[in-house]
Length: 260
Image (cartoon, rainbow, N blue to C red):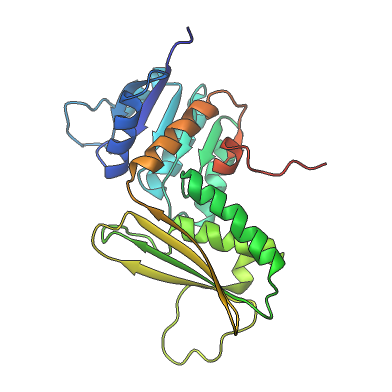
């Protein structure tokens, strides 16, 4: 029998960290090798980061952008450990730093680890390709719990990027993160975001293609955050078998098109 993969969980005291740990503990092919959190955090289950990284095969991290970048750099310098990052809200320079670390180790970074969401990305790109910008306006709606600190969500940005890719345009040229006041008529080709924060909403995402005479809505509803934890663990088990590189959930699920 193949030995279980040794998994360390970063940000282990957070809601997602706890969910990941629970999923790992319920599997036979993975071993919850270590849990760690920010310096100074106290819990009987925690070990220091150095001890966790010394023997883990993969680290799963749902913490903060700053902490994730530092962890990627430490893992890259040490070598021998894969990394799965589920944090969201990264700036461009932080993503560049993670991609640089991925030259030394395999890193899977995704805004969403749900199978359904990753299937939705492909559908959105396909619809955007088929429906002309002159006829169909695109709006991405997302809703999350009141504790989420970044907006729009990483998943909403992924969906907008999929729509932009489908239309063959740069997202930064057509994105409208928010509207307020006298905004004027909507420009042709704009991809907008609408955001809600409230209660305990796990995650709701919809992409609307609105024409003068019809509306097409593609949507996904998350009912339990354990679905993200399961996806992250699958990504970790996949990552330990890969060479160094920057990957996402589309790679893990084999959903990316292979060039002929």
